[in-house]
Image (cartoon, rainbow, N blue to C red; front, side, top):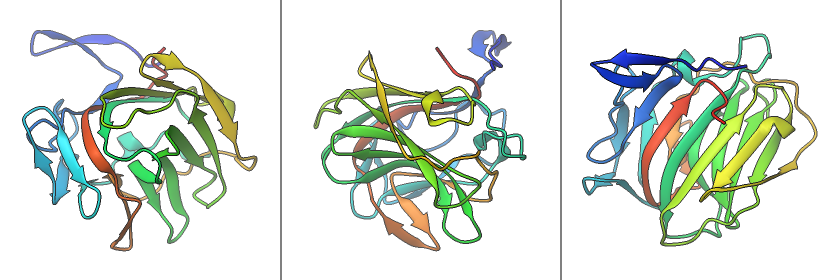
Length: 219
């Protein structure tokens, strides 16, 4: 299923399926401006003009919950999405969260993007519970180097619908067995950490820039 369409915004040709964009050069503001209330709120972030730095101990960006970040029709029928971003990690072996939309309370888990054992993991949760399936990149993420990442999901309610591209190399393996569909939850989107009932974990150590969310499978 595709929602892709090109439109003019301010005289520039834009992709209507691009629902949120975070350049992360000087702040965590959303750059398109078509959805209100989705600018980021920073904790111990720094910026150098081109990218954001997460310190691996306290840094995170919190984006308020909004329906644009939930890829479901509300009845456990998934909808497609694409996430694109560039990271320069200072550590690639420990488990670190890049994008998180989960809370443990009241079955509020949706999805999570992790960096672990040199790989990118795209995790989707079943009906808000701890049951989940993963797509795992075949290509390694390189430490202290810019790595471009593209994650797509076709909305098929299957783990095989996830595809991950790292540095232009396409390839995905899969893990997990229990999955029926994503639930729309009240969890905020957190960049660089888990933030569950005020408690952080799995904090990212490195840089990130050019984070974009699309509501279709961008092939």
